[in-house]
Image 1: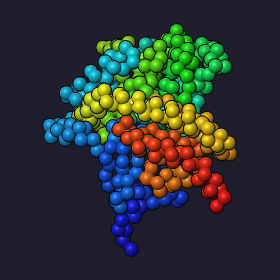
Image 2: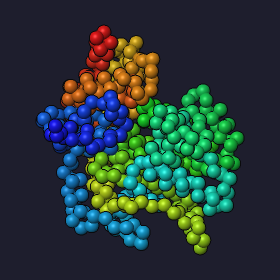
Image 3: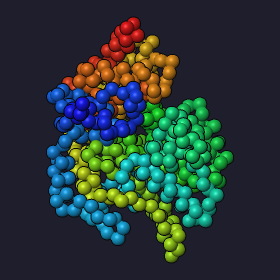
Length: 433
């Protein structure tokens, strides 16, 4: 029989990300979106509780962003970004550099979070080579980190399920734990002992997302950054997820005293409408590449670098993000999540729900399980049960989290909260069945 439905046609030709097709359910055909809702081909609506993999901060099909994309497409859809420039790229860089937490002077565009990280790593390594200190070539990173799926970004990510198949091809990295009240002195001592060989320190400020929504304190990170700065180690803030309001401030680094030398941006940069990556750096780093020696050029680029339509979407998203109503909505979601955790979630079934936590618009907890890895089947069960109730969740194994778009209504957020409260009953029912 010839496949007729969109889902059946998909299964004939598509290989989906992070999907074991031998075990996966048929994909749900989504035909349109509106604000916090996604609609399938049967007219069913689903609350997008994770912002479609953390990118969609203003909701789906936002008319303001759509109009800006349309107007830009009529004027200029794309142009090579070597030897040419255009208004959307320049204006977006100007606006972002003004609000980024640090003394950033230059913006380098790419096309996603992984490439933004690759750019940052290559900048840092070549910086020391251009400074004629090539022995500073080690990278310092946190365990449980996730920085992307290209080889450089995999190398600086926590080693495990995502990277096991490629372990022999990844470069060596110095890994340390995230700071807490007990290990701060030990971590600082380690950095000092290896400082002469460390080119850069890359970190996800305050929240390690794909690593399990791990939240850690700003004070501990500040102490490490202070030590890194004292030893001339370049600091790279990966704000691909944490940027654009997710942790309650425009950028998570705004909660820190010590600022990065390089910052990586993507995901929410265009409101989830277009692929775009951006890597900002200080003037000192840019100046290290200025030379009469062409070998000191930063030989990196992408076909779609600074795509005009993507930059126009970024400008439109920034317009919305800086509106008072959006800032207030971020504060409302942050408060509602915190109150839900404190007043309700923390009190229900502590034998099953562990380590409830929240930061900004993100709420997370673990379900007690003998397996804490990404492939834990409890995540698939929860996703299926949520879909039945008109909610889209995608747990990280036994780590359940929500990260809704900022336009989510109080009623929609309450529905998600009530579903989370039902999990102990659903899981015990499943175990008994």
